Image (cartoon, rainbow, N blue to C red; front, side, top):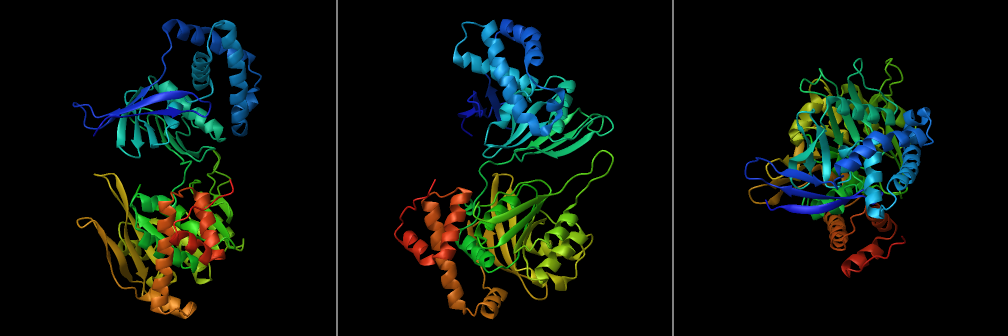
Length: 493
């Protein structure tokens, strides 16, 4: 691999340079943060004097520090006070140096130190602290797993960071409760463990929340799936056919779920149910996101996925999105919802359409195979760990007997989709829409043309994609004309 360098910037404008290299004596890339350094004299003054002045003079009550809803207020109060104190102690300081020192103070008092700096990088999916004896590891969207040049030198510091994260979300982690599973206000998911539960030391794992959610156009652009496959899926979603997305860990199941939700018509009510908030739907949809709640330290107050699924059926949903189905009762309620006229979209861990059917029909889920005919199609995501490529591997329709018919399967050797004839799809469209086979294919081709136009015009934003899909439902001829002439759409910003 060739060396890569770029700059990451915090919301306050603090910039840090990054370089990613493959040293000859290393087996994996090294992710190097080039943090502006402080002189030893400056660091001593800050650590031994200014930090204490800052804590003393910042107008922040201890209750505000412990209140997760006051985090932004606490940070802004500390920032304003830090600037005053630094100008008093360093009278000739320029604005750039002031910003570096303010950022250092905030990171080491109310922040997460270098962990927070790494979190500014939008290219990173995962940040992992494996103990004080190991460097911080990250998962990069382009380069996969990388070691960083950053260490958290003391186990006590890792524990303090985990406690800070827990406080932000109104939770706690300690010797009696050594496991933490939480969602940060920005949507990032955090897991932490304490020694001796984790033998090599305290750990923190942060799965970052993407500020730019995956859209169907981005997936087509990245060759995760073809526009032809996406157009077929669009036709299913438009006509309220339920979809299950299968795949292994990190294969992109939630990204695909997020992207196909952009095809939901704007005149329908959408309820989503997740363990942690990962979905981001277009603002044009009537969308109610529901999230499970963990029990408190006394074991009370839990709201489970099943509780939310049952409750969602009382909210008059047209479409239900379920983050992941794992248990028998959840699957039973979900398939019962399909049978009573609701369109349901969910994910499951499985590596093929047949394996997904086996998971659903054997313990612990153990559904009768006859129930599966409520499901329209199964999409299967795979992740090629060698090349760090995610792909829609299979699209299969579910037949009336619960068996599957593969419609598309990716051939990795030939680098193309192998296509097979639809069976139940044509029957469903003829029964419910009165469409003949050639009419179905014309509709799919139209949608494929619209998707190719959106990709060509680089419409990757979730709201822009959602807006154009909604315009298509309202006036398909208008959108088809824009696509045919490759004209740009003027959005109202």
